Amino acid sequence: MAYKVPDLPYPYDALEPHISEEIMRIHHDKHHQAYVDKANAALAGTQWEDVRPKEMLKRLDELPEDLRGVVRNNAGGQYNHCMFWRSMSPDGGGKPPEDSRLAQAIKDTFKTFGLFKETLTAAAMSQFGSGWAWLVHDGSRVLIVTTSNQDNPITDGLEPLLGIDVWEHAYYLQYENRRAEYVEAWFNVINWDTVMQRYEDAPVPDVSDILLRPVSISGTERAFGTITIDDARTQAAELKALAGWGPMARVGTVARGWSDLAQTLAKRNAQTVADLEPGIVLASAIELWVVPPERSMV
Ligand SMILES: [Fe+2]
Image (cartoon, rainbow, N blue to C red; front, side, top):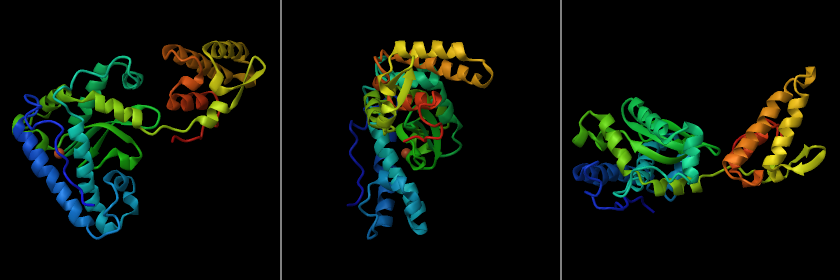
């Protein structure tokens, strides 16, 4: 099944004045089409013909060397641009709703939406030459990364949530060399509904076994997932009392970890640890030595 350029989910002129009709026509009909044509030509008749672009980008290492470069650039071009069109909307802009899980994740990493915007803008400006700047999910938190050419963060095991195309073909006709103006304008068309959906669908670590791990609270054994704010506070207070006694010196660090957990539960209105997001459960479990620190993500 050959790749196809999907229709835009809005008219070519719908993103004006932020992105001109002329740019959208050339970007979508010519540049995106060229990636698709090249990918199809390279993959025709190979065992990779029916593999979805996202899957292929995750498994680039498995491709034969003569195919790897052309797939990386053109299956990458296909995947990135399909994402890009859906990341924008004439009704876009603003920011994700304050009570959304994505807004909370952005706050956890960047403190404020304003600082997130500054960081993504700085990343888009710092990408030398052609490439992309991305908001990604690493299984536990959101981060910003850049890629060159048509590389996608999925190849590095990161789930892309939102990407801005900073190839000149994405802005030059309208903004000439003023990339900063293009980035600023692009924030007005971000489709946050789509980005929120990608955040909800992003793979997260399986923490079901961690939630069942036993922890001792005031001498009673409990499953980690059932710990409440009061339990975490009790544990913090008891460990704090023990801290500083020679071999118990590092207990203070763990006590702070329990205080942090109590604060996290309160901040997120969570009744128990099981109500927290998997990435937070995993990070807390490692900090509190509920699981060995070497346990890896996802
Ligand atoms: Fe592009």
